[in-house]
Length: 131
Length: 111
Image (cartoon, rainbow over all chains, first blue to last red; front, side):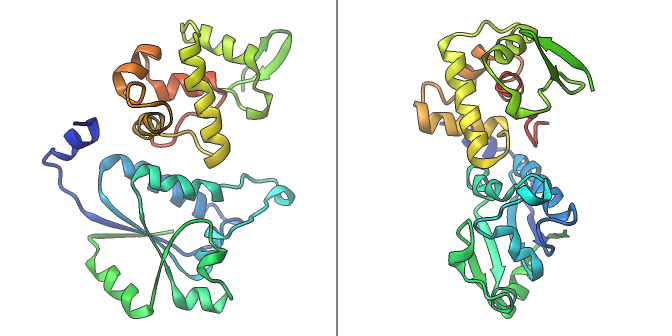
């Protein structure tokens, strides 16, 4: 039995956390700070979902190049989330369509949700944190 | 931030001794950091340090210790992907000490 399994046997309460990412990756600190909070939250073995909506879908774009604006490109870090056992990534179809994006444009595997499906997912959550 | 002289080169480190500019890293710096951490670098240590550097190049973060343990297990085998093995190499925390030696920032979620 691995250490992970033993931790799971603890009686800790597991809540459903949703992190809602709504902003473009650069220009503000929201996306990077949100990502860091998600990575820290992973240590607490909670049920975490990540949603990318509005300009937040740009955070997951392939081929981001930040050299010209001299900031760190953290887009590759979204690929590390799987190793942190964060595997529920969602985007909303309306935001994707409005920006001419499809799943093939994104750096990680996501589930695309309709507005109704997104609404239901949000209603299931115990905590929703918006960045 | 403090500057230290490592093998004749001025290098900037943060208040906890982590390298500020990752691109400056070389083996001399690794050896200096290891000495600071009182770690005698063996091939087994280098294996973990190099693994961390590859992880950083791929994901742009230093992994949390449980993520590191799992990833090492996957790449180098279960006999290495466990806390006992990694803590024997890096007694004050594999993520913290090995990251420092590898020139990486302190892991996010290192609590």
